[in-house]
Image (cartoon, rainbow, N blue to C red; front, top):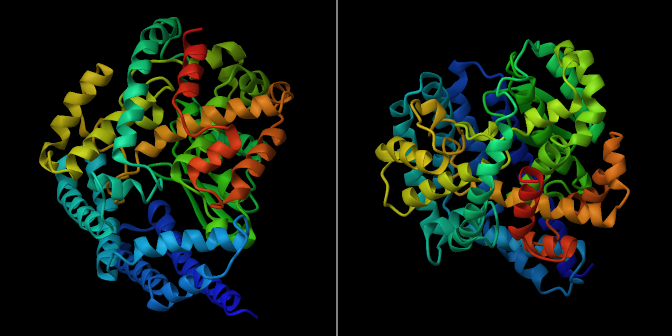
Length: 497
């Protein structure tokens, strides 16, 4: 066997060893969010810190760098599995070796405590309970950015971890195009929505009935419950624990079934991506999602382009009415209008499609101010409230409805939020292309048949893993990199008629 191939096999073995440690940490993190008793936190933080440190040490070992270098000397075919894995291992190794294991462990320990502090602060709507933890997270985040290095802004080093190749400058340009377009669409969309009462669908929807209906919808779009499950948590998320193990979570409102439904559709979109990755490549780049902007495109596509369409409710109305008898008094068109109602609101995960990206603009701008040192953590609530009022015209009176509503900062995910907007742009672009390439798709969606769309996404996106970088994948799939144009057209057509 050529030495380079032997080196590749050793790299493969090491990557799968690291994946075992990381997946164990993921299982413990999922348990912390769903089932863990409060008094278990101190030891859980140590467990997560140890596992993350061990995974980091094994991947950043000097021998791994030598193996990657040996593999790079082999002339693997450019489009081969080996070439794709080696390319990404190099990128990940160069990034990981710049951060000392002690810093990785400290961040993991801090994250575990910060998440619990955030939950308590959110419940009491008291930012001051969370502030000391945010101070620690921000300090560690800046240290990591300094370790990684950056060009124009430390934010560049942070967003690189979620969307390789993206920069603060590129995001500023994207938002500069998108923001005025949204502002121009919003007035007519709000005016149209005025004909739909805000509480039209408010009623009595038992949690058990919601769970049963949500499961039927998730199964219909293709989520495999033999390899996954749905649980309850404060903040919905999707976690791939390992090959054949994908966990979704949602939250329930007995007066509003749409919160859990669209939470499940959103997270099931993530889950379809995770279940569509090549399971035999788990633990390698080929078995991993390419970026969060691509990942988010899958959730937003299923949640909005499919789940909030007239076709969706034409098909699902009779089934929903069986689970929720109150819906019998509404037509599919009325329900469609209600779930597409545009009205500025406080909570991002419940925001309508038009205003959603304004929530992301706010978070992006605050993160940039924090990371670049122009904003102190003590000033976050006041700054949030002021900017939120300017963007969405609403007065924030509770921290729980403002700067405490998202768990991301508690999890150390500074640099993450912009990928939600990238997901919206990618979703519109991918759906447009799918309809062009599969003319029968419109009719199939009206009949509640989702296999064609799922298969197209599995071929074009899921099954590719990290074979291509995100923007290359978008070019190959749609003929162009991520642009704001198609999302703007989608919003105008849908909400301005």
